[in-house]
Length: 367
Image 1 (cartoon, helix red, strand yellow):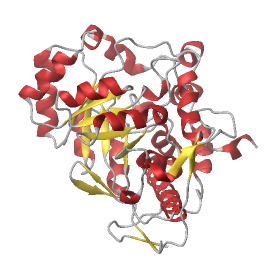
Image 2 (image 1 turned 180 degrees about the vertical axis):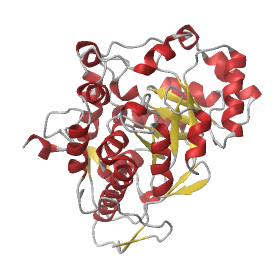
Image 3 (image 1 turned 60 degrees about the vertical axis):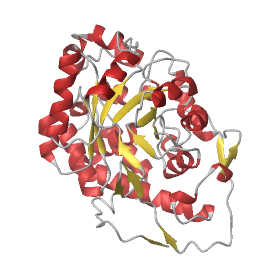
């Protein structure tokens, strides 16, 4: 099975890591208990974390056969440009606790492989330093901690440093209780600096979205949409990207899984904006399911962190290479040669075969 020869291949740690399971095992061995719990944990009972995985495990494939799949193209469009996979490095606060260099390391890995990065405003180094670390397609995600001129300043800085889109995260009006961190007494160093001005995030409303669209020409991403109703309002406000997310299960406990709400949101958007999604996506087959259900881009949060924790920048690149192979294999076995051929006809509802959890996509880890 061949692939479209668009991007140069890299294979760091190819012999050491043959599977994503080995990446996860290495990350667990490298991380201290505090950062590890932060990485895999969620809010309160962590029900939303498990439902993210359960939602993906409740989708089965409907393959077609006797199709010529000798040439597979897993590339995708991202804000008007071609990228190697339909994935984005999702914004993660405090990457510097996972890997030396923090967001700059993630930027270098994204650039080496050929996928975009979204930088969190609570991740070091800052906006400018991360942009200088590597030439990659990048977006900036802001937690609002100031007034309108404060937001405008971040938009200006993002545009000046090559960020091609701007993201407001809207599911953090209140900061959740993350009991793994509390029980482990893990105090995230970025939390103290992010706490100041938190009331601005709590007061965020559609008025600020309207103001952004009136004043700025950068494409706007609204991250944290979990219902068709809010997706419809976002489109009415001219938002370019509706980002389906429950913050990886880290905010509202007892929410639905992202893959569960994705179809209704894609239907509500009806092609008037891009639909992105994150929440529990760990395998190539997960990415394929999301595209079949109407997403254009899949955010990788925990998986990207696991790659970085396993072996730094080369570990992230190797993680993406394995993911690419899984996606290509899944497409071929479904009987399609590109992402554009995927649709709801390729998936159906099914009963999960195992208990869901943050790492249940890697069953060999329990053996």
